[in-house]
Length: 388
Image 1 (cartoon, helix red, strand yellow):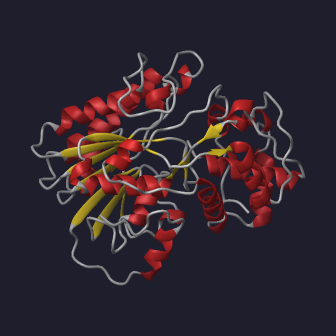
Image 2 (cartoon, rainbow, N blue to C red):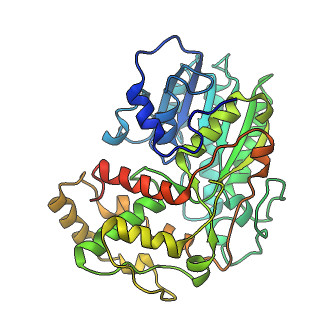
Image 3 (cartoon, rainbow, N blue to C red):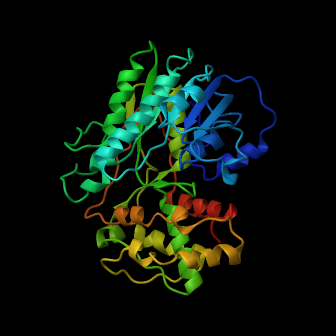
């Protein structure tokens, strides 16, 4: 199978601009979490004229009102809180033409046990609304992530996780993890429909665009850099020396979307779990310089023990000034700056890397240059006037 976008940065937007009128749909995708960091990429890539499995009709579901930065995607937008069983059945039950489900959302709660309960309810609500009512449903993509191998955030540093590089056959850790719950629900519900296939996708640190995502590392770093520039202060790295100097990898949101589309239409990728990362490695000490260059901010030397959440705790008014002065899209700092998440990502005491051999062996050869992708997503944040 030929993938026109292999290795491309920002190609989806260019291709959408070139596409002409639509044609009869071959596949119908339902994206749960369409305003999220991967959902937004699926909303951009699926409708393109030469996306494999297409032409695609796309439904997009999210809890919030449709944001302006998502509105230009040719997607039928459905506002729905999938934690509400009655609302989910009312709004998703009538979608009888859906052939492919892309589940790329999650809910964050105070404890992992609460995460297990909340996310299980959401996923089961969607499957029980869709599977009995969509006779042509062929495939379900479930996105989880690298915490499958590391454990949940609350367990970081408290349990012995697997030793990297991570491969898909590693056993589950003996801790609560809502990813495990979602997998079990997927297996159980998929068995209820003969011929229904599935795939599980485990990205690492995601590089992408979704201003309000709870795990948007690039967006958060952009806001931090903009504040440093406004105040005339250098960029200080909030993390351990290992996070600063060790090797890291990332997962480009467009690449994850392509990975899910591949598994949806390639018979050799059915009923499997796959890691999904860019295929290269980098050091944050090098990307930090790139971040500084993009915002014309000096980078400070490494200091041990800094916390981004602590450095940014009183910066709400500063961000309000920046938004007003630069005429940015109106946002509050708590909407676009997920400081705790960046601190968690940079607190590690060893490098965490994924093994992509299984995807390659099954036929997926997509990749990204992580540095180029980093710059591309920063450019997109600026283009949509989230930062300047």
